[in-house]
Amino acid sequence: MAQLFPKSANVHARVTILGLVVLICGAGWATSTIYWSPYTTEVDVPLQQPIPFSHKHHVTDDGIDCRYCHTSVEKSSFAGIPPTETCMTCHSQIWTDAPVLASLRESMATGKPLKWVRVNDLAGYVYFNHSMHVAKGIGCSNCHGRIDQMPLTRKAQTLYMRWCLDCHENPQKFIRPRDKVFDMAWQSPSNQLEQGQNLVSQYHVDTTGHLTNCSTCHR
Amino acid sequence: MRTRLVILFGLVLTFAACRPDMENQPKAKPLSESDFFSNQANARPIPPHTVERGGARENAAFYTGLTNGTYITQLPVKLTPELLARGQERFNAICAECHDRTGSGNGMVVQRGFPQPPSFHVDRLRNAPIGHFFDVITKGYGVMYPYATRVEPEDRWAIAAYIRALQLSHDIKGSELTPGEQQKLENKQ
Image (cartoon, rainbow over all chains, first blue to last red; front, side, top):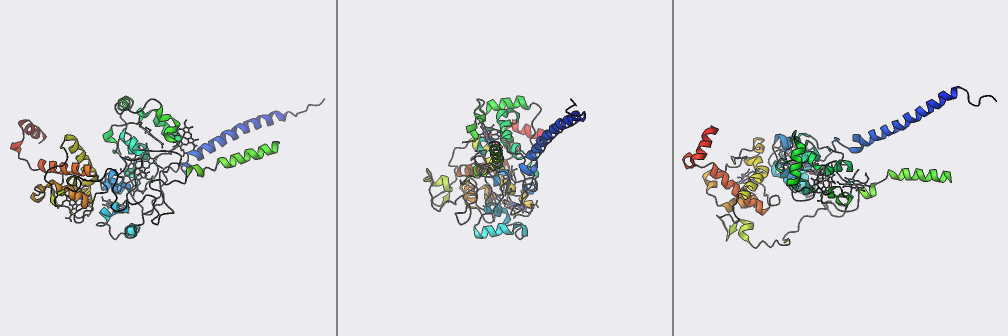
């Protein structure tokens, strides 16, 4: 009987197998690139806001503290976005005719709040709480990056579950002294692990596994 | 059978990409937009004359800085190092933008064009009763907006106490310091 497969079939088979491997790897690579790209995560993408508000100007150049505007960050679950009145504390006297602030003045006159577009927006099934993190030595910059250098506010982290867990599993890697929570330029020292371990016990951070329990964040 | 499986698999894949229902739940979060209230905000302003639970505010001196229409001259809370530390932290965070950390009235925002407030180190304010400072934070003063919604009464007293400490620290003779403190000052210079 003549040979069923010609000799070249060997090559075809090899190429097909190789091709499949390349295809599967490629698909995996493409998926992960898209998954982690700014297109999906929205990290570092500035959004269109009703007023191009600059943290760089207000925080770094004018020396305004976060708590001046985000008043509830230490005592409640949400940090709060300043009401029109807070802006007018200063802008009733300075930049009073600036066209960029026209909608601010209109909001003051009509009582309709400005519609800021959310930059960090967790899914409705996730519970988050600012005061708990701030009280235990987790700084704004751990989660929001160098806000003080942003001309337009952008997201600094993915806010994926994996990201929360990276810290909840090993808080000692990220924790800092409480008086440095609002220090945007804080960098972890070379002995972070040792110091972090001390702070974790000093601040009574839970190490019993409660922090990685599903119902801590999905409640 | 097999085609049905394929179709089912395809459907699963299709719906796996749809997840907005749980993500955008129909609940009102503190800062979310409302399509019900006329000003389009879910967070409601507190109606006038609302009394919060435990907020009868019977201690008028503590909540207004006044007794019978005159400013109180004594701090209505206990003066402790913690109170002063709290006052310092709040003052630097909320007032120093205009008044400067030293109270000179030449803060960063003033340097950018805001009307200059008076220095705290003038006789009129040195002699002002402590209730006045509480009252200024609560109701505002001239072009300075009120801070009642942003600074709680406890913190207002802490800040008032800290301003007093600032004033004392700028109005003391070298000879009134203890020898140890004088030594420290020498070393600084």
